[in-house]
Amino acid sequence: MKLVSVVVPCYNEQEVLPMFYEEITKVTGQMMRDFPELTFEYLFINDGSKDTTLEILRSLALKDERVRYISFSRNFGKESGMYAGLENAKGDYVVVMDADLQHPPAFLPEMYSYVRNGEYDCATTRRVSRKGESKVRSWFARKFYKIMNKISQTEIVDGAQDFRFMSRQMVDAILDMSEYNRFSKGIFSWVGFNTKYIEYENVERPAGTSSWSFWGLFKYSLEGIMAFSTAPLAISSLLGIISCITAFILMIITVIKTIAFGEDVAGYPTTICVIFLLSGLQLFCTGILGQYLSKTYLETKNRPIYISKETAESYREKQKERSSESSGENASSEK
Ligand code: UDP
Ligand code: MG
Image 1 (spheres, rainbow, N blue to C red):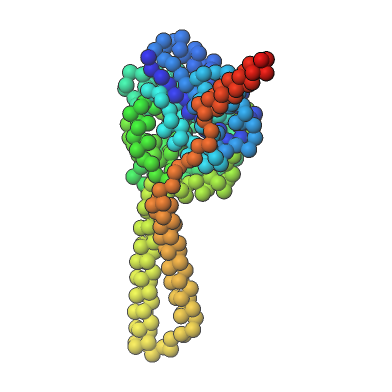
Image 2 (cartoon, rainbow, N blue to C red):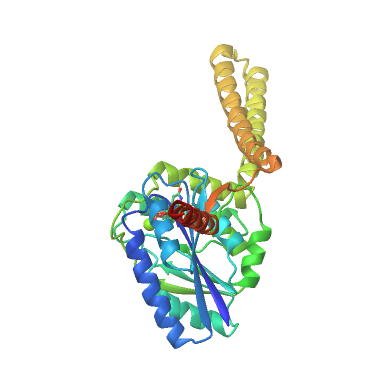
């Protein structure tokens, strides 16, 4: 028998969660009929939701043995959610997918067919269109992938997603990368292994709202660049070299003008210009340095990637205790 763990990070997903559960159980039910070797577990990560997501997960866990969940002590972000899911998944295969049905469960049988015979270690989807997304957003997204692939050795496929069907081997490789500043698109690619891309058109959310603001995505993309490329550090040295050369040329011109043509040097404006230019460059470069230093600082602290507050197991245990306590009380009150 092969166990497939379906890992689902959830943040304020009360509207779609019941829909998602219905959909995923339908698909996995069909898969168990088509591939008798498969069994499933669902591992939901409640990433500090402020709505009733946790209550929904609790009731699902009582109703369905295969449902497990981990509830964080606060919102740690989707990256931490995925890490927690991968770390706690028990499966021979692990699927990572969003709760909002933008990663259609209907793809699972096809994904499994690629991973099943070991030809591929990972099957994933790739959006070929960004239908339903604003023009500005998709323009920035495309530019991000272009820049990223230019300055980083790790290839990040445009439109690649966090919807993945992975073998245990690949999951273990990802777990070995326990860095604090996580950028999964880069990590998936960095670990290598054979990956099959299935192309599809973007699907819109049936309910709820995306929790990514434009600014949030922008910061996330900088995170990605810094996690997988040191090119910005090289840019600062390049800028330094360019400004040195400029200063040198200016110097020669001034000397020639003074010696050969006897011209007076206009001191004040040139000095101000040079001061502004150079101090600006210096600040810019120190800024880049500081960014990398701050990331290194966070890594050396070795903080946990997530903190779990409640799990399906602990909840079931508590419910069992409670019910045995109340039955004990009933028995004693009857006496
Ligand atoms: N998510 C999460 N923690 C967060 C933000 C999002 O676990 O802090 C989950 C969310 O519940 C969903 C997935 O990550 O399952 C993708 O989020 P969303 O749909 O908001 O992003 P988008 O599809 O717009 O990229
Ligand atoms: Mg979404």
